[in-house]
Image (cartoon, rainbow, N blue to C red; front, side, top):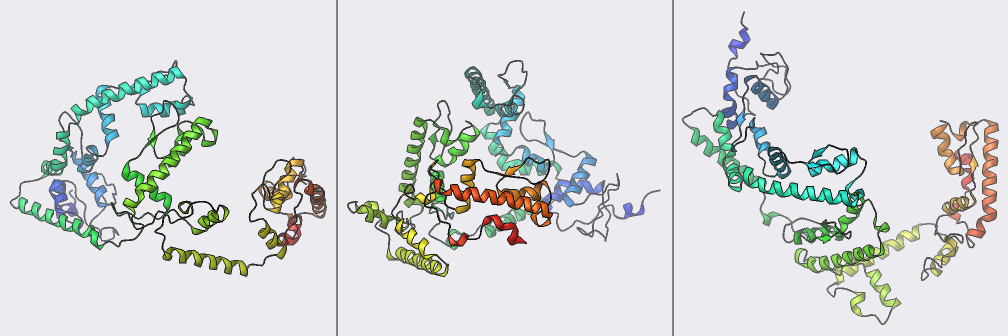
Length: 502
């Protein structure tokens, strides 16, 4: 017995979300697979999400279209010659996407059966150079930077042959004329495959084109209507607020590229990206480079800053080049009175409008410093150490290793490391030992308890360990930091943190 609902809703009404182009493509779907209206559906009250053929619930209009096309085995053929790909219009747009250059290379390599052999012995893996990078990492636990000289030569030779063969094949499989034809006629050709003859088809296409033009013009505002600011690029209109960001932005416009400091590496980029390049490709850091490589890298960065500074006025003319803070320039003039005016102020166009904000910043800093409670002795010491270097500040420099440590708690921890002084954990069968501050975290993470919940015996044992730790540090502290005087802001002993918490 036939279903009365199916007979009644043989051709359901077109919903508002369906465009005329979609109806031309999939108008044949309504003749076979239909969805009866369901008032209880939240997304579309006039559409039933249950399919008549397989009784499967499909939510979403696009998903129902794909589901119906799967029942009918509908597909659009690719418009390229000698290509057997077929699918929905959306899949076709992704299939011959102009921006998918790597996908087209892989497609051409699949036609030619191109592959690079693995350079390791007794390994039969073969694939593209990109696949070989992953294969080296996951299978052999190495990278291109750790290959031997013979393996590296073999890999580079196979890679060049692979790229040259694909370059020749790309012209045959994806010629430029086919790409231009695809850009202009792909949408029309894919629509014509499922389009049924209609009398007013041309008028409808013209109306659709007019509507699309109106939408594009409404989305893109005129350049004259955009608000202009100082940090806006004069060429592309992009706003870049930081100085380093403006250098990178100008380098992108100029397309500058510096070669890597390693021999045989053809990588070219801005110096700002070389830190990541050294870590990912060469498995090293800037600190671990040789003296020659470090000198070359420093010259590269200096040349990059100079070139970007000279070219920045073309792209950001409203921002003066010498807009560096005035405090640094005044210090240079005071320390070296014979220095030229060019070293003190790099740009003479620094106007009074730039000096006023600097004065306001000074006044704000003075107001903030007045509000803070400061010790008179500390302020005198700070005034006396303004012209000194870091090595002359003996109160923050360790006499044993020369390391500079400013905070009092950090100096205590540093001296404890020199003495290898530690407090043992009070729990049985626990060999952990560290400073008292680290023991608090150890109690909560490992033993799931706090000092407040200790028994009397455990608390006495912990306090004795802390007292011995602090007593030995007080006796030896003057040897490592001779002029160390504990500031009043930190007058509360860190060893009595448990007592203050209670």
